[in-house]
Image (cartoon, rainbow, N blue to C red; front, side, top):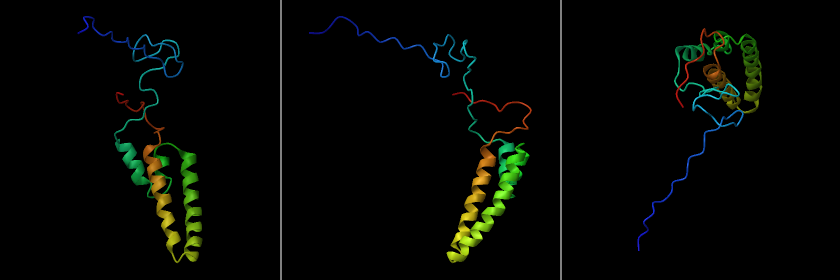
Length: 130
């Protein structure tokens, strides 16, 4: 025997603000806490500034200086000297294999320069739709 009633679909819950947890009247912004869609979301594409900073980081810290992080530039530059010293000490005890740690530091500095925010940007980075 077949049922003559149609199944009732549950009503979707109203979207809630990720910051203040209040119901959203508009799907892209919250009227209570000024949250907007795309807040603190990094673009997934690379920009020429990011690639330039990564390539400049062949000299540790130069990419950070290019993006406006002056103090971090000096920290990575001094860190490169310390890393070279410790890797050379490790190389004497490991038949030279300790020198393989230096490219790891170098790769980290280049990756960090690529992903860090650009403080010199005239306008905020473009947001991608979520």
